[in-house]
Image (cartoon, rainbow, N blue to C red; front, side, top):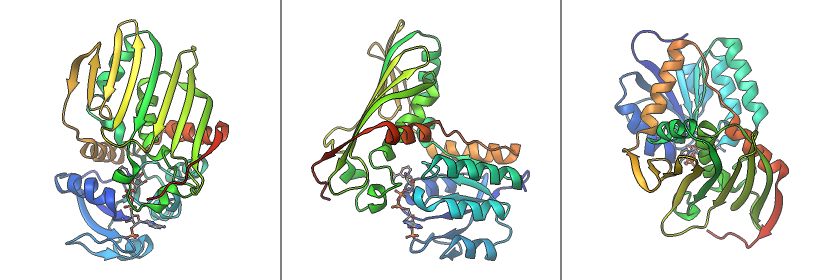
Length: 311
Ligand code: NAP
């Protein structure tokens, strides 16, 4: 049942990189939550009971109110379903699932059990996103470009799941860009795509995507996972009020070269604030637009086979 008083008793599942980098530090400072248990096959969280599976945690900790599911997307549906059916609120790491329809099913199950489901999109909480959105809402956009180029060896070492079917390949970071783009740009759809698959991998290492908004504005997206040196996480729009550049994953906003917004990031504290808000309001927050675009890119995209990727 929604917790209206006191901290939300939370369990965390899939203790790996993002749990250690972001969830635990954000939760440690957040009085809205009490982290009471963890479930992971190998990972452990100090100072709380740890269980090998979510089922064991749900059995052993009946007063748990919510869970954060942080394992890779291919392995999330069954855990989410078990938690929702046990009456727990569920925070899904991004991407919320491996398919659009499985997340639709989770939404239905959450509704049936009267609990909240949160499809979190951390990049939407980057500091300059709302300022960029307000700027674009006040301007006439003539074109936009999403450029997301990073070094997979630096950010995802030894993550085999990310290259497996359902791991999304370069769309794992690319969906972060899409979570921002779908929040700040008018509704759009893919008109063409080309996906570069290394000959030894099941997921793409690069993608070249063209979209069109319903009023005809062209939007391009370039994803590349082999960029060494400076990394690019930029969204650029040409408008009648000047050129907008959201850079550094939307940490910074510049209009015609002048920085108008630049703040330190607090994405995960804000995600947890939003989760507490929806739990207390008794609603869900599940926007599948970014996931739908990834599905469409795989559906419409031409497949190029490129050089093998070696770790
Ligand atoms: P990770 O460290 O490779 O995986 C997280 C944990 O999930 C692993 O430590 C593992 O814990 C568990 N796991 C792995 N394979 C599993 C399986 N087959 N079944 C059940 N559990 C499994 O990955 P991550 O970087 O934390 O990413 C997890 C999710 O967070 C992804 O959806 C990713 O897109 C998202 N995310 C990652 C980052 C980032 O910077 N890394 C940033 C934002 C969001 P056990 O072996 O202990 O079970």
